[in-house]
Each structure stands twice: as structure tokens, then as C-alpha cells.
Length: 386
Image (cartoon, rainbow, N blue to C red; front, side):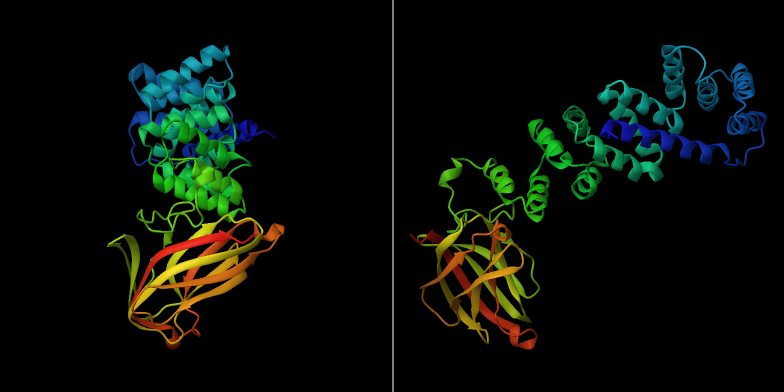
């Protein structure tokens, strides 16, 4: 089943589920109009559409602008007349009863079938507003449809209106969307200027988490000025820019017991980490890398100020998030700047498409990992060894 057919099927399920809940709902009002409307709903539930239409017309004869009565009439006459006539009834119904979920569902499904995605989006947006219990189902349908470039474009255009479900759709598409939906949707959003830095960061993290390191790097590099081939790894190793925690820049993870701050030096910048006496396993400074297989050398300039660490601090490299490559370039007590290095080899296999570089505490877990004092990191470079 194609994404379009799946979503149309889903919308009709919404229509039926919402319809059944509505038809059998009880009302506290006992006036004649509400009694007649309840009767019309009962006729529809029993499949007696002619009787339902008769009752709805009777209500409209007394109250010509009654929205729910016209919505009931549109449903009762859904199989009568040409497609244009049926559509006209539902368009009048949505004007008179804009909060009716059945009417919104029918119109959304109609416009989807006919490729009018902009109109479908308006009704799907309204449906999620007037019927929040259907929101997850609609988001799931949109997550499938987002794989279609034309529909992704319609979503991107609709995002200019800042719908409340925007973040929910992006999360759902990343986790459960149809194949290709994440890339197609984010491409359309980027084209229309509807991606902010947080959106880009989540998208890149999604690609990295899925093992698509090369694609993530290419998309991230496209957000930077300058040609890709001139980018150094690690990027921003001299901390000339504040770490953005986006893509292949430095990530600063919030770590209890650690205060991180970018500081100015006489000849550049550095990161200062102040430790408050709590056990710390990872300092919180890390960066994803895209290194070619083969030997490399990590260079780091660091110094300490009153650092108390049972085994000092060191750098760790892993394939992805798990398989260790190397640890080293340790520092424990250096009141002046010290250059340290670590040689390592990136394995030539499919399990090491990307790497993580992290500053860690090698002490055993527990009180031995308690840290006090300061560490300054001024320069981090990786060179290929030929």
C-alpha cells in the first residue's frame, strides 16, 4: 500500500471511529432540536440515511444556520448526487460546523485523494485542534505522507503558520516515519526556511544514530561557510567559536558537578572546566568525527589549576558510541600549558563509519571519580600519520 493510500485509509478509520463516538454520545439538553439531532444520529448509526436526512432537514427548517444539523445532512446524503454536489454539501457543513471532526475528516480525505495537499493540510490541522484524541493517528498518517516530496512541500508551507503539532510531527517522523520521510520532510523544511538550529541538531543526531555518518556530515557541512574539504577534525578545535552542540561541532553535555565556560586567552580561546567535588565519569566535552581508516595522532594543549583527580583526565576515542579505539593524552597536574598526544588507528571495517572523541575520567566508578579544581583545554587537533 502506498503512503497516500495508507493515509487515506487512516483518515477514513478516523472518520468511522469519530463517527461512532459521536453518534452514541448522549447530551444533557432535552430541547426539541437536541432530541431530533440525537434521533438523526441514531438513524445514521443504523444505516437508515433517508430517515436521518429527513430529521436533519426538519431541524434546518426551524434553525437554518444550525451547523451540526447540516453536517448530519451532508453525511446522510453522502452517497446521493455527483461528487461535486457531495463536496459542496461538506464545504457548507464545515462553514456552519467548523469543529465537526467527521466533516474535517471527510474533506481531508477528499483533498488527499485529489492531490490538493494544501487544502488537506488545513483540514488535518483543524482536525487535530478540534479532536485532540485523534492527533497521534493523524501525525502517524502525516509521517507516512512526508515521504512524498509534494506532500512534504505542503507540510513545509503549512509550518509557516506555526501549528502546535509541529514538534510532535518532527519527533514522530524521526522515530516512526516511512522510509525516506525524515530526509524528504527536512529537505522541504530547509528549502522553505522552516528549520531552526534545534531542528537541524535533532535531524543530524537522528542520522548519526542511524549510522548514516557521511550523510550527517554532508548536511552539517552544508550549513557552514567555506568548502567542506577545508574543515578540520575535530572542528573548532581551537574553540574560536562557542561550541554549538550541533552536528560535528563540540557538544557540551550538562554534567552534574561540572561548570563549563569558554574563556579568552592572550592568543586565542580555551574551554575551562571547573569541578565541584562530585564524582564525574565524563566531563561533558565531546565531538563526533568522520575519520578515514588508518593511523592518526591526537594533539591536545591543556593545563590545570588546583586539579584534584585520583587518576587525572584523559581522552577517549570510540567507533560509534561503543567499540573502543584508544584512550590517553592524560593530564593530572600541569600548572603551565602542556602538549600531550595520542596515536591511534581507525579500523578499516563497516563498524567504524564514524567516531566519538570524549574527555573522560579513567578512575573507577564511585568516590574515586570525585573531581575538584580546574582544567583548561586550548587546542585539539588530529593529524593523519602517513
